[in-house]
Amino acid sequence: MDSTTFLRTEDIAHLAARLGLPALFEALVGQMEGDFRRWPEFDKSARSAAHSSGGVIELMPIADATLYSFKYVNGHPLNHLRQLPTVMAFGVLAEVATGMPLLLSEMTLATALRTAAVSVMAARRLARPGSRSMALIGNGAQAEFQALAFHHLLGIEELRLFDTDPAATAKLIRNLGGRSGLRLRSFASTAEAVHGADIVTTATADKALATIITPDMLAPGMHLNAVGGDCPGKTELHRDVLEAASVFVEYEPQSRIEGDIQQMPADFAVTELWRVLRAEAPGRKAADEITVFDSVGFALEDFSTLRLLRELAAEHGLGTPLALIPDLRDPKNLFSALRTPQPVAA
Image (cartoon, rainbow, N blue to C red):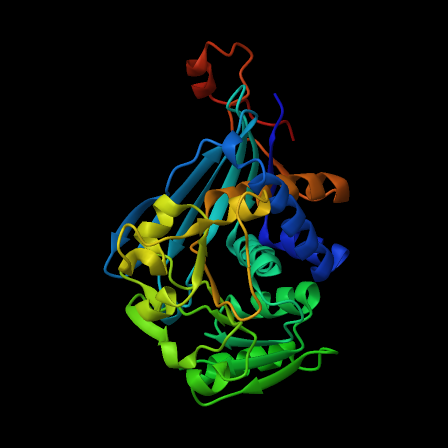
């Protein structure tokens, strides 16, 4: 029986080092664009979530006729107090014809990479051409990935930084300082950081109905990449910001529950991003238009990421064979797996 390939965090880091982050981000964007254009081919559903006072645990499944994937992911904003990441994840890619799991992969690091890639994929259609300045509100675990993806793939040259925790901003500056062509500026408030920015990315962690971006902060032509609002009871944008903008989402049934549009009436108009990628709907229509990508993360993005990771791991000889499924001489005799293994000769 073929074994399942297991990818550790170190394997993902090796891929990033061998390809370089710009090439890895570009590969992720390309893979996701191809899959989003196949949108009607997928069996889709909103993710299943188990909420608690401390956070949420979610399962994100999706399948086409050939492959099935799911991701297990949590979001616990206070995990740093326990020396744990706010977000932890793993994913599985399986063969539809047999159900055989082909890949088991870490998805904590991979999710950060794919989230930044999705943001750029949307911004290429929604942000004003020639955008060079981005405000980054929330400088935690996702921030460096967003910064580098927008720098390398969209040409962002200036990052305008704010976080309620100054240590988070200091961490980001340590990680990204000295990179050629990228100017880092920290500010004392969201309003100051947003002023003059072409693009505004919000990636905050607090599980609250927040209004981090308010209408008075908007400028004609601004694109807002709202990443942090990703569960019921958590928002980042004032509802009047949404009213003033053209709003784009990944999967509307899920976004209505989890995104910033959860605060809007059911008939509030949004456009699913796949329609823009298939040229069935327009993206940005005018230079002075305000656009919002209300991103909550969708299973198709993980499906694309797992497919790409499997291909790249095979190409670069990474991953560990994992005996996840019993290797039975008679596949109808599962009980035989309980036989005591013979001791290995010395």
